[in-house]
Length: 334
Ligand SMILES: CC(C)(COP(=O)(O)OP(=O)(O)OC[C@H]1O[C@@H](n2cnc3c(N)ncnc32)[C@H](O)[C@@H]1OP(=O)(O)O)[C@@H](O)C(=O)NCCC(=O)NCCS
Image (cartoon, rainbow, N blue to C red; front, side):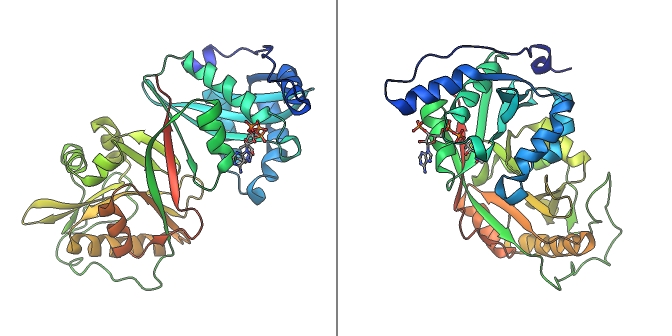
């Protein structure tokens, strides 16, 4: 049981009035009637119903429902006995908290529920005494940005360009793939052959720390809308999963790729990190094409904080998303 689930108790708090005009009175009434409590398995049908009406049924919350209920920090907003919204707080690493999954039933929008739910989820998360508390949203989500900054008091932390791509129909194979044995280990997406290697975690972390991306992202590494502080432990975890791939030139690491199955669509691919010289990036591009073909990947995505990673993505065939230009990461001033 996490600290979040231990401290979960319903919260029938009365909020202060929001003003004198009729809309504010209505908002305040909604706030008074809103109960924010831990989500339970019994809430699943209601949550599936609400999420089916969000983003044309492409909301990812249903994918994580069971896991999030067990994990804790999954808050339900109940209005007159019905689920009107929800939100999730997750401890990604000790003391490092992440907020996501804020949703309000489309039938209940613009009545102050999103704002009130956000305030209470924030308060509950601050009760856990986080060392850091962050979240992300897209630049097109204006109501979300308003709630994050004006209501919750988060400050901009860093921002990314969002890239997407389709796998090449016939990607090049790595030219050296017959030169030596495969170095596939510990559940990687596909075997790798020299000059592609699976570097040690310390070497990979060292490479990341020296990269422009590390500086531009302020030390964060993304994984499908989650942004976690990169450290040796995290890289070791990714290496165990077989997600860390390097390119060597004269025995030295001159490129690094961190590639994972997309968090919402397991056949798709998500690039957490890509950097290196032209030869390294060309080899990574070939590897990416091979993995995509093997998995039946339809979409590849990634975000870049630095110009260096943006160029790497372009070289690997990815393009800027046509509508969502930026992903904005915010941090709560603790
Ligand atoms: C974002 C969401 C949770 C808001 O829920 P809600 O209950 O409608 O929100 P509220 O009524 O409490 O507040 C909405 C606020 O956004 C403001 N707003 C709405 N459209 C806006 C816009 N285009 N630009 C700026 N602010 C806007 C409203 O004016 C209101 O703020 P105010 O009362 O201070 O003026 C809801 O729209 C939702 O579930 N969206 C889909 C999922 C999503 O985008 N989640 C966030 C992902 S990070």
